[in-house]
Image (cartoon, rainbow, N blue to C red; front, side, top):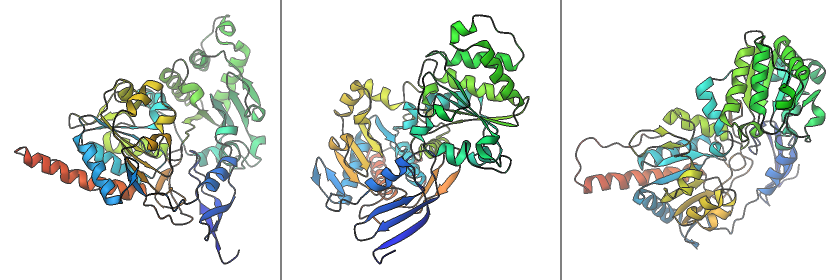
Length: 453
């Protein structure tokens, strides 16, 4: 190590929901960049390498013109308080502390708050409420699971360390031989780069996940299936019976499910069937089910919004209390239906991946954006803040996909403020403006002020 470098041990990678916290980062202090990231996967290495500091980039802009951060905060607060149906969206790539500020702002302006969960594992959130969840930490999976089932996911490409660190090859307390002590099942409509890991590969017909899950529930309960089950699902009865027997007779089983289950025909019914299957299996052995989450702190976003409002995403405050209604209060819908008249986008880029109709309306309303880089959304922003990167430049709390909170260790400082600082400033000014509006209207009675967070 030279004079202009330093080593950060036990750093955290916030690229995906694995939130691996065993990184060893080598930082070039002169160039302000990470030049080596030991233990990181291919996605993590790219995540660390691409986050360099553009010191000549403006920290704040209004309509494309550089302004002070204070001026931008003022304009953002004015924009949000003047709107009749303001929306807040994103939150999955920032800290829990920043997420709390976003909830407080949205509550105060009687707006609508939503996370990226609504376009990925939103159906799972609906299923959790209707069915419940048998759950565990990834540490328990590593140490105990002897049957691991991946359903509708491709971790080899989306979460490269999930196999090696948590579920398939690591040696655990009760799985001392690693993969030799486990049976790995992969259920997917096609072969993927994850397929070679599987001991058993099951390929149902596209859109038939619900039927396969319901058939497995029947077999677990000792019911007989009709002879045409293979014609209906694409999976032979013998294969289903074998999987049912394995699930009932394992010591500790886990069902990991991805967007191949939640975003196909059936949606929340698919997730509900899988969660119900895990519950059924607990009559015979110990079985858990966990969604494999994408963004680094999307699980944290769900947790924060849930403990603040009672609901995980798609929450509306227009009546002065939280209401939950996916399809009405989720962001794609509020934009596609032209309901929103202002938006605050935090650590997300909906202008690059939302449906065309939603993007068109988003571009027609004033947008406040907080992001670490220039994006398609920030290009159209009325107010744009350049912020520091969580986990690389700033500390804070994030949640791993198994709901375990992890504290971040930053590698080097950024000249740009963090999301929490900007949102605190907006929150403070929003409260002042709302109080002024209240007294100017001659209203009487108790004034609701957002609690400090």
